[in-house]
Image 1 (cartoon, rainbow, N blue to C red):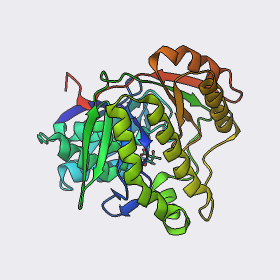
Image 2: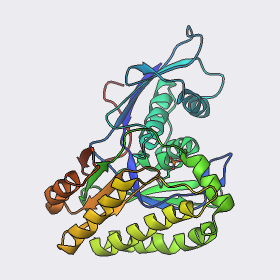
Image 3: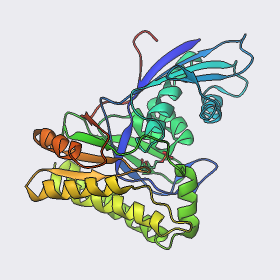
Length: 320
Ligand code: PMV
């Protein structure tokens, strides 16, 4: 009764921000993301009738903070009458720091738990279950460019272009390693309830999705860059205008944006996106990755760089 799965985080180019149903964790808007290749979470799940309680280890240390969300996820995948589980997670990048660690974690644990329980579920069901735990996790079941569509009563994810159809690179500039001050669920609810920009954000999302879809189909980097930066800045401006205001950026985040603008001025194909944290993700054409890496590394306040291509969806490990 065990299973091991691996999943990569994804980064939204057209963002999910806001929920239409908090209890079922259904997003208020559709989104488009890219699944990364080199960053990963591996989850091992083992059900054991002799265990007195569920136990989670993250990178070798007991983690009681994340445990309740993992327990809920196992209950949804397997049923609340399941045996207790030993869950071991390894992750090769900072956790809860705006790098989509919850996306890869919940995608991986959903796939591993289904295997451990002997349940054969199709990818849409796995994505729906992962999405109940973390909205962005549904997208990590799929590889390449992924669209999450908001259906009337549910979600559906689809790969709209494969990783090797348009092999972009992503340079992540780390500006701070600590966990974020406000979790995304709470920040989304504060945004919905108090931000004067929230309703126009929801209204305009169909247009942004369509523009990005067209850009991806045409491999039009400039068009994708323009709409992704616009959508990212809109998401953050909702939060800046909320009460209380929420600003995930620090001074180095801002300096990274200036670096990206300078690179663009030199004709380098790059654009930025930022999630619920201070890290800057620079998406670029593969031929420009060395220039982008060097410029961000030289930006004051950047403490680390991670570079990755695009990858595939969550999957079982061979031995599982
Ligand atoms: O899946 P959550 O609840 O961690 O929310 C993710 C929200 C953003 O990363 C900011 C945007 C997105 O679409 O991934």
